[in-house]
Length: 329
Image 1: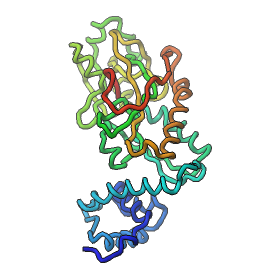
Image 2: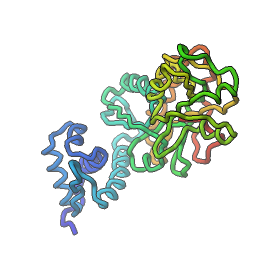
Image 3: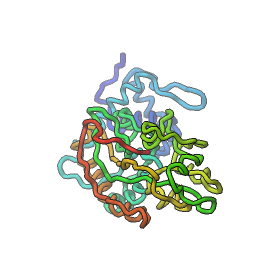
Image 4: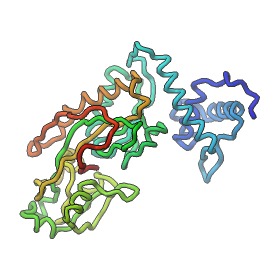
């Protein structure tokens, strides 16, 4: 039982606990906070005294949080959100922001949206630092536990406390090395080829692959990679094919040729996803609005002329189930 007064707590101690848990290292936490390691250790000792728990224990070369620390971090994130709202109030001014924003995104949406988003944010909020983590197949806990404030993915978790809004739709194309082969001339030609695709952890294939398999379309996969950035080396210099979102032709797969799919395929929607607690947060509302605003221009820059497609954003906030099948990353 701690003898310390709970009023000894402050926002910096709460932030420190969350950041050390996220980084798993006192050294990295100190770098992120812009302070010395000794300062982090001193503040952790103060927090240990207040809560009566060691908070972190050594594990190999790093540290891991105790069960008590994990539980406290959940409450700390909520309190930090409340403190942020208390400080900003109704007169939110992005020019006063000096904080880290963490967004989860895989390589397609990361390269397409986040560089222009950062440029736009820095026009009015130069104190913001953007941290990007992979989303893989995002989970509700990523957002509940504040591993990220926002996720961008075709696969919103179907949980009542998770909100979503559609940003755009994309179509699918077949990518190949034009120096080695031509586009598949028929479905039979397509099925006769070797194929490459993406497999996210834990063993989650692209929705397009699941949809085609459900239709009885079986392909021979010779390579499965953890992200779109790994596709090109497995197509280059071969006759292999990969069926992927058309927007990849603008950047990650720009060296490869592409052609329409030889069979109908539903579109791939892309969503921004966030936790319910941020619904009325002025800073988060501003962030979401800035992301929406950069989408049309980002799509125009990325989409090759032969992939012209409607870039309207038809979605709206939702917490219910997905309304259509998704071919997605």
